[in-house]
Amino acid sequence: MKQNQPYQSDVNDHEWNLIRRLFPERGKLGRPPRYPVRLVLNAIFYIARTGCTWRDLPHDFPHWRLVYYYFAKWQALGVWERLNTRLRDKVRLASAKKKPLRPRASTLKVSKFLASAASAATMQARRSWAESGTFWSTLWD
Figure 1 (cartoon, rainbow, N blue to C red):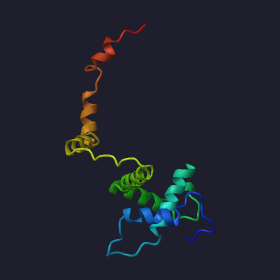
Figure 2: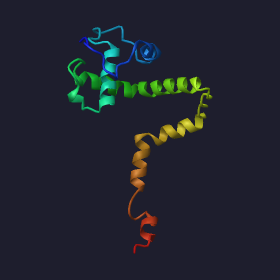
Figure 3: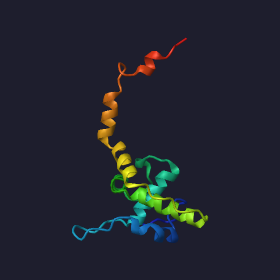
């Protein structure tokens, strides 16, 4: 679907050239995609900028279910994190700041575990009223 007028949230050519390599390439098998990645990205940015619901996406963009599918897929693949890192590093270098150091391997391993479902389940299992000495020892007036 071709847009008549661009939205303020649309990615311009310069921005698109900076980030287009971060999105996964199309596979060799299967049918070709119906919509270009840039149009789907513009739809996601429109939702982020306006705060509208997925179902209220204008008809200039692909169907909201397809846009949400790509949003979730790119979230699972870590595209948004890589995009944020790339743009943050460019801004830091442009403002003459050093590129942040990468965390050590041990720090990455611990943070990956803390973000996992197993860690959340362990913390939830340990959290009970009987084990919380802080709650019961607090004086209430």
